[in-house]
Amino acid sequence: MTGDHRPDVAFADLGSADLVVDAVYAGGTTGNLRDEPINKIVPGVGNQGGFRPAGHPKNGAVRLSVLFTTGGEVDWPDQLDAETGTFTYFGDNRTPGRDLHAPSRGGNLLLRDAFAAARGTPEERAAKVPPFLLFERARERGRAVRFRGLLVPGGPTLSADDELSAVWRTTAGERFQNYRARFTVLDESRVTRAWIRHVLSGGDRMQGAPRAWADWVTDRTYRPLVAPRTTDLRSKESQLPSDKVGAAVLSTIREHFRGRESYFESCAVEIWRLMAPATGDCDVTRPSRDGGRDAVGKYRIGPPTAQITVDFALEAKCYSPGNSVGVREMSRLVSRLRHRNFGVLVTTSHFHKQVQEEVRDDGHPIVMVCGRDIVEALRGHGISTADQAKGWLEQACPLPV
Image (cartoon, rainbow, N blue to C red; front, side):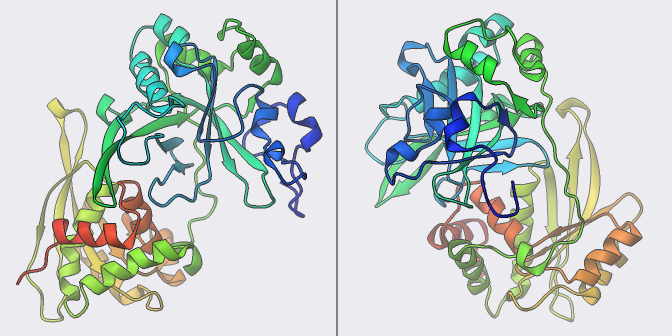
């Protein structure tokens, strides 16, 4: 992306360009739907909706499918984890009164069939799992989109239930289900125009396919595109929610524990479980003289029949946005760590730069969970608004009477 926010690929060149990860593809300038770039990039997939398949899912004849996300729907928080190459996407049944697979575009049918075939034979994957191309709205300019990668269903460490699950939502008192799907972004920096044309014309998808995609079809080998952070230090702004809805979620948590902040420790344990599902038993101590509470727990590693556990210590600080976690709070957690233990510090605020530097430079095995991390963890489990957070708190973190 250029410094003046010009797209990497002009609107006139969309039909001939390769797809390059994180490149921006321009929209038109007429002021109507003809400005949409995706159906110019991938002819035949339409210009509306999140699912944009070439071919209809009801016929089982989808040659290729685009997944499009705005990244801004708080009730359906599609999320790309660039550090693991995992993309979480929500299906198209987003209003009450319809069956899970009822939406006319057939997006949830496509998810159901593709994820089932993904765990089948190589022949089933080759025939029934189309290539998925992920685009998101580029915020820099108009209708421009950014290509985020070539996807395949599932992931190397996910169970079938984790890969595709039906989740419940409530709107205006009415309950309904939608899919939450997890994909892997493959380690392919470029998808060629020649292959896209070949696939759309009905040709054998394995012919000229990107190597990582062909390997996945052949033996279900996942090679994710992982992009570790280039810096260990996070600014205050990057540790707090960037949107008003996320800020309201954090505010709801603080208000729940107002005047009883010592009880936030139990809530922090539940938040940590959302981030680290392999967390085992945890115990929260009684308040100490300074009002603080500690938690200790075990983290499970390995297959179910041969697991080991690693002990960890957890502390939590229910702070306002202007109050950072400093050296004093971190030193207390560091002093509790024993050989082969790790620590977790959860805060509704942010970590001071000095604390981050000392943890990094001294090599302390401590996970620092800030306010934005909390919001993203909750969103990943369907808790996106202040009302939803309030309901979750009342159920998962009730206060004693």
